[in-house]
Image (cartoon, rainbow, N blue to C red; front, side):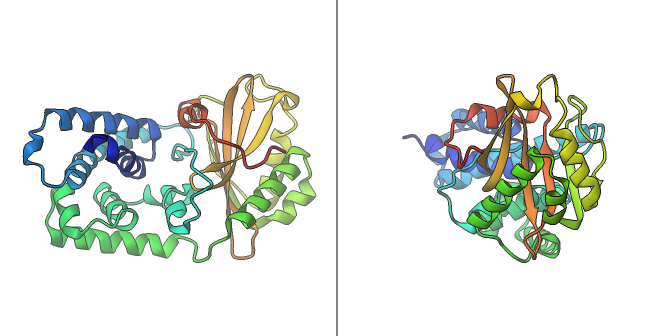
Length: 296
């Protein structure tokens, strides 16, 4: 296996964590391959660090242009969901690609985001990160400190087991599919927030839906109406591993029409719901073949 192929998975995950888009991450990896192919590799002492530097530079360039495009995005922007393996039981590894963390990383500057990803997710040294982002070690340390403080202040301070998360997700799916508002109300935190990303291409809420009563009514309502030409009776919902945790993938008319993931609070109730339905963001989920955790 070539040096590039042996590090391809690393390159994709670095780019994805920086960009929040599987499609853009794949493009960044392809650009990295082109630069790697043109390089004088006889002078490369550490292929892993060299490739990480290339993909980080490419991803940062793409992130700056992507952020400019997001200023005109219709409705809330959420990261592109990816299918992951349920065999990865490492909590830290799973959390590093969770949608909740990916959303939080959007609030960092491009430099802070790259430094945080390389340090926290991949344990790069400050010297390696400085080389990757073209900054001094001192500026990288400062960026890492700011990013770590920002993330730690806002990320949940508790973790649910995979079994607990899966059980709540399954119960939520059953209640929402059955239009059971009372049961949904019992599962939702009072200040729950539903974020829906349709990108202006499919019917979704253009602003966050907040409060247990409003979210329960919304979820019960959408389960009883046709969506993008697909009737509820022709939809299927499957529990799959999304971004390191159990999530729901909706199919209809021979295609993936949406994904849904939950964030739980300290009481085990649902604090946040991320619903992604922009067709442009469902390519990775559509393309990858995995075994379902459960088929309700």
